Each structure stands twice: as C-alpha cells, then as structure tokens.
Length: 500
Image (cartoon, rainbow, N blue to C red; front, side):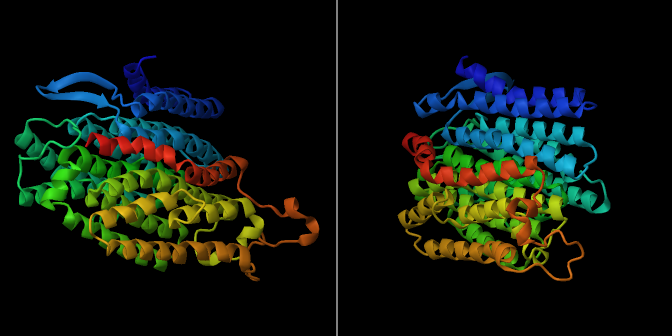
C-alpha cells in the first residue's frame, strides 16, 4: 500500500464505518462490532505512515483543485502525524468504553451516537492531514457539525441550551475570525499551503502580524482560550464518552493543533521571534491557564472540575507555540499526546463512577475507592499525568515547556507552570483522598459503598461494567508507557524544528 493510498484510506475508513453503523442500527452487536473493527483498522492504517514521516518523507494526496491555487490536499507531516495517532488510537478505547457506558446507562439513540462519533474521527483525521488552511477549515467545520448531535444527545432543555452555546460560539468564532484570517493570508501571500518556516515573512509587518495571529487564535474556538471558552463547560451535559471525545480524542485537540500548525507553518517560529508578534498570545495563555485552574478549585461537580482543568491544560499548548522556541514547540506538541492520555482516563473514571453509583459531585464520593479500587487507582494515575509527576508522560511535555520559556527569555513563565501544576494537585488529588481515605457517609441513601471485610476483596467490588473499566485501566497504563517512550514522540516532532 502506497503512502498516498494510506492517507485516503485512513480518512475514508471512519466515514465508511459511519455508513456501516447506520445500516446496522437495528442489530446492536453488529453495529458495535463495526465500530470497534473500524477504529482498529483506522489506527493500523494511520500507523503505517509513521515510519515514512520519521524518515523525512511527507506523503501527499491532492483530491481536487477547488480554485486556482487552492486544492483540497492532504500532506502528512510530524505534527499532523502525532494528532492522527492520538485521534485514531484513542478512538479504540473510547469506542469500547462508549459501548459499555451506553448499555449500562440504557442510552437512547445509540445508533446516531456511534455514527456521529465515527464522523467526528473522520473530520479529525482530515484536520490532522490537511495540507493547507482551506482543507483544514473545511474539516474543522465538519467536526463542529458532527459533534453537535453528541452534545445535545439527551434532547432536554439543558442539552439544547448547551448545544446553542456550542454551535454558536464555535461557528461564530470560526466564521468571524478564522475565515477572515484565511482570506487575509491568501491576499498577502497568494497561497494557503502549510510551508516549513511559514509563508508570511516579508509579507506583513509586526503589528499586522499580531492582529492576524489574534484572528487565528480566537477564531479557533475549539482551543477554548478565554474569553471564548464557555462552550466547553456547557458541553459537559453530554454523556461521558462524548466528554472524552471533546477533551482528549478530537475536539479541543483540533483547536490547539490548529493554532500550533498556524504558528509553525503559516507564521513560522523565526518570524514570530523576530517580530515579537506572539508575545501577547503568551500572556493570554497564561491568564487562561491561571484563571481556569482557580475556577476548577471551586467546582464540586467532577466533570465541571475536569472541564476547567482542560481549559488550563490547552493553554499549555498555546503557550508553547507562542514562545516559538524549539523546546516550546516540542513541549506543546508533546502535551497534545500527554494530556490526551491523562484526561481521557479521568473522564472515563468520572463516567464509571456515574454508571456504577450515580454520583456526579466530589463531596458525595467519600470512600468510593473501596468499592471501585480499579477505577480510582486509574484516576490517581491519570491525575499524576495531568499534574506532570513521574512516572507519567505529562512530566516530559511540561519539562520542555519550561525549557522553552527559558530559551525565550521568559523565565517568569516557569513559576507560572509550577503554580498550575500545584493547582492541579489541589483540585485532583482531593478526589483520590476522599475515595480511599474518607469513610463512606453513614446516612448514604444507598449502601453500595459499605465495605464488609469478611466478604473479601472481590465480593466488595462494585465497579462499572468491564467495558467501562478495562478501557480506563488501559489508558492509565498508557500514561506510564508515554513516560518511558516519550523519546519516540520527541523524535517524531523534532523534524518540525529541523524543517524550520
């Protein structure tokens, strides 16, 4: 199979899977088998491109020319390769988890749910492999529309309100800001191709570059930079597998990936360093990082706390890109993968707690670790990854972000990053402490926590179904694996700085 064929197949497989899921909707077992088989095949095809990309090749597939000089084209480069691996790879455990969650929670409209999920991965892979801003913009909007039914899955008033915020804010920012930025870029350069070193040098001065970068940054609403972040907490009304999709597999990663790709291939790190055009973006990311961390501390609802944590963690990626140094960009790219693995674990755990014990608020989770030791141990490991402690992969991305700040002469950002990590300790580890070291409330309405030592360990387990627990255990282990194999991620992304 040629690389060009692999690109087309990787993008089309989720689309074909969506069709298969739709046609087999009346047969749940077959429908879900198609979901898992498609996710596995997609990841395998994506993985076949890794060796070529690491060897310096940049496989390309041009589908059609929409306008003179504006093709619908796909090019696989290191940053897109990483995002494609994250999206396709995490689709596998998320698919398994979604099956267990939807069956245990007796979700309605499950066929629509799995169809939209597959379409979201189709859109994410289109974004990952986009060869120019036009192609990326098309798939970026597809991703918004394909995930809207997932956000509004329950169909009640709260879900519809969340859907209005979600659709309005994401379409509003991309239509008002990103589209204008794309047209301006085309006017300045006559091309929208992603080019190593950027395409704007000698085409725009520092002040105009600041404005253009602002249009791209705030036009990428999925990155949840403040003040365009409220759609993300609102979307937490969706089922937990959707929250995992939003926070780890596709949506928010598409946002920060887009910003990072624009910085590397449209502006160029050298151009940003020379003009200082991205300095304001550094401080915007820092404000978002600090503010969201403080808000997370106030949230008792577990998914809401994790949502604000995500907003802060996304700001790490934006900060690393805005620093425009070698280490900063490497750290930003690595954080896409590290945060994805840690945060998907935490959301899986939140969903498992809800399925098994119908609990959403942290204050009601006293002693739950005695009934759910596997889930809460995974939560502990995922928390360590988000905090950035060894032996979890999150350590390495934060390490390089700190080095990037020093390289840029912004040593002040190092204690800011440390403050954020300490904040993560403060809003994540209390969940673990409550679960394992607090006694269950004596007036608990249901006694599903009560731990009888005489019954033995296995008899006291009250975990979620195995299709919920197994994926969260796998992703928790993945956090550890990324610590020891971070050099592979580093080596993949290092080619970006070499090309630049």
